[in-house]
Amino acid sequence: MSYTDYSIRSFHGGYDKNLTYLVTCMRTANQFLVDAAVPLDSVSRFINHRGLITLFITHTHPDHIAYIDEYVEAFPNLVTIVYKDSDKKINCNYIKQVKDGDIISVGQLSVEILHTPGHYPDSICYLLDEVLFTGDTLFVGRTGRTVGKSSNVRKLYKSVYEKIFSLPSKTIIYPGHDYGPRTSISLEENIAISPLLNAKDEEDFIEKMKHYEKHRTPGS
Image (tube, rainbow, N blue to C red):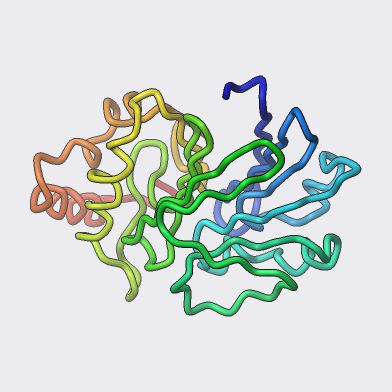
């Protein structure tokens, strides 16, 4: 599979520089959305005659599902993908609960589920070929934060360092927020520019996260 088999269009908006992605299978014209973080009217003119097939939710923080009602109303047969142990009730007609390693097909595209807890217990990354939609697990320049009551910095370390970093270094990440100098980046480039992605071990990562939180500025 290659970029000629699918297209990715990004949309900015939402609560805090959120990113939503519309992916099209070029062979079948089937489309799916990653997160409902921007209004439907921002995306609608790019949705083709077949309509949306699937909505992949990276995690159920409110900003990532803020506009789900609009998409479900417009596309009643939309299948929404969430992690199997999510405790957040999603308002949709069709829901598919998934686990780590599951494969979801949209047209001729195959999307692999990577459960990546840490930022939030039901966080999922979605792997399409060598593209990874990372939600709030991994941004350009840093990991997600672990300041919420359901966050866990040790689980985030394992999700990023043991799972995501095991992928090919050329894998391109598409994060859930536009916090970095650009909106997407390869894993190897991201590691090269970020101290948070260069921890020696789990304890070093925890210390780096503490330092980041102590010195972070809003929007960084």
